Amino acid sequence: MKIETARMEYDVLYVLAFNSNRKRMSVIVRDRQTNAIRLICKGADCVILDRCTHFGSQSKGAIETHLKDFAGEGLRTLCYADRVLDEVTFDKWCKSYREAELAMKCREEAMEAMAGEIEQNMTFLATTAIEDKLQDGVPDTIARLLRADLKIWVLTGDKVETAVEIGRSCRVISKDMVEMHLEGTTVPAMAKSLVTLASTPTLKPRALIIDGFSLSFALMPSNRQNFLAFATQCAAVIVCRMSPLQKALVVELVKDGVGCVTMAVYVLTYFSSLYIAAFNLCFTFLPVVARAIVEKTLPDHISTQFPELYHIGHTKVSFSLATVASVGAIGVFHAVVLTLVPLYFLDHHQGVLHVDQFADGVATYIGIMFVTSITISLQTKYASYVEPKTLGLF
Image (cartoon, rainbow, N blue to C red; front, side):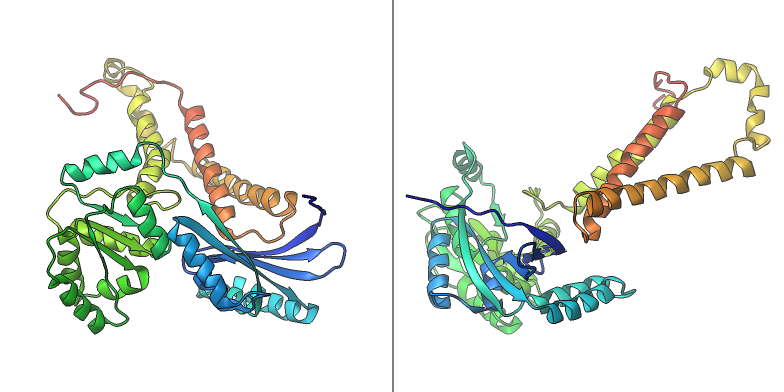
């Protein structure tokens, strides 16, 4: 088989970042040879296919059939599409997008709306199907947990077919379980579905399967308690096509509504507020507290023997106008450097003109952590052992 390769070079004009609401991301590039402007988009099939008007030699139905077959095998799928933009259309959109970036109110919503405006009338390109293999020992571990009478819920953003197949492969759904799909397009319809499934007689353990769209109605105040009661009666629960916010709401529902110990394990890029709080605690609060506890200029018996040493406090030497001004100036300098350096290296040095604010913010925050830790280390002149009486233990 002969494979021909060609090298194509593009200039990146815009990056329309991914988020859980959009379920897609795009780049707008300019071909260096033809000077043509092209938008390339990738994302979930349910989003990409609805924004395509051309599907090449295949029909939309045939593509959806292939995607369903891939999902039935437990493969995770992505769809790709593109659109060629003329100069007039791009310049008009570019002007509107820049106005959205500078909006003082509802900036994120305005930018998302403008991204959705350009991601229309696309041509379908291809589909990828990737196998995400389970780690060794996962099925056996889950089987042991189930034998210990622990309830396991799977909360995922995957398609229904993919989530169910993964649930079967990791033994969350066993062969002797009855799979029950909970669906509802309105609040009353969801209430009716809950009553119907709950009253369905069966001697086998039940596995509840629900997608994110139906879950939004199940979590409504009039349905949430009935949903929780029915879900806790099932041997396994799989919730798919859900957003990170919905995952947090389900965890909160179970934690507050069930009088049992609940543990939520977040995988990949989804972090609960507890993890974020712990991260901030470790890198901002603890270093300051550690310095306050550990640093001592003199031992206690010396300090009490010579009261003259306390003149620094009542004379306000450490809180004079000059001291406060110098500390403030150093803080402003650090802020300017930590803001401009990421912008320079990310936006200009790497050749990307428009990097999203999240990437710049993360880089700046990491720099703040390093500067804070290094500053505390440099200002710590004396370190002593922590005595029990210092902590108030005795």
